[in-house]
Image (cartoon, rainbow, N blue to C red):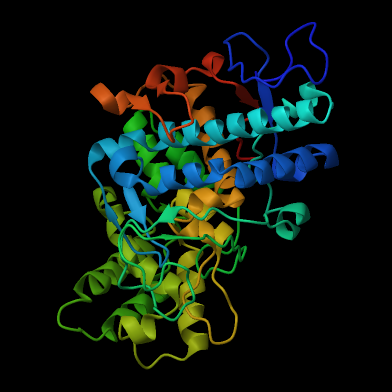
Length: 420
């Protein structure tokens, strides 16, 4: 831990001592279960990291995909994305476990120093933890709290031509490498296909049923799942009707067309015709999720009411991955009049590390991971430097072995995930 050593008085304990295996770890709770004093310490510690500049470095750590190699699928703010090399996917869960823990440790160090300077009890500062997103959404204290002051050193990693240049995002008009100030935004649940949490218990169970680390990790990060398996031929035919209205714009919409047909086959049969092709449902779900299929995918002849009726029916059948659900529920999309395509900051790869919601949702995803670890022993197939994790310059370097071993970690969960 970071706080006072035995025999020290309050005010004498400002140094970071690190975590020693065998010491009592901090207990992570759900955000809705936190006491008022725990909330106060968490929000105060977050603000200290904003003020001392460490949150800038943390945010840049997540944005630095090429060096950190920590996402198998890289989702952009407009819900589109692309697939990275296998080692990126295999690092995903361990990297984000290290990242949330590194934030937690930095918060404790900053708060301990602050308490020491003010003559307060450092042991209390040493109890700060990152809460996980529990229940059916964020509790009121999270919804009411937005941190003041935001990182100014986040830099543009990629220029995304599909993001509307008039959506008001701070990176609009910038060049690669330019820096900008992140504005933390959250429109909880304002998403067409990620409007509720938690993710379907059935989908999570399917993810955690894999004995293979790779299969489990990919499922949690990026694989869609079925909420139920009752065939619905009428809905399948309606989805095919939507597909038939797609206008081919110089061949650009061929994948979206095929994706709609694949979803129709799933709904008609009540299962995956070919489980290896689950990824092919994503273009259609993305088209639906963005709610701009009329303009960008050429779907014609459908009123808003009809189109979103189909969307809701499909979303009740096929759900995005748990990772995507948590992200895009947390982010949501602005409904401000005249603003189009402006999402919450946890939906933007470059902004996410500056958003407290991001760490809470990844803490929940890590809780699924820890639940899997309790009954499985498979490890990620990583070699060389890919087995080491240093998420930002001020953090320690973790090994795969440490991140997979609960006794080597400075936290535990108050309870593991269960379908009930």
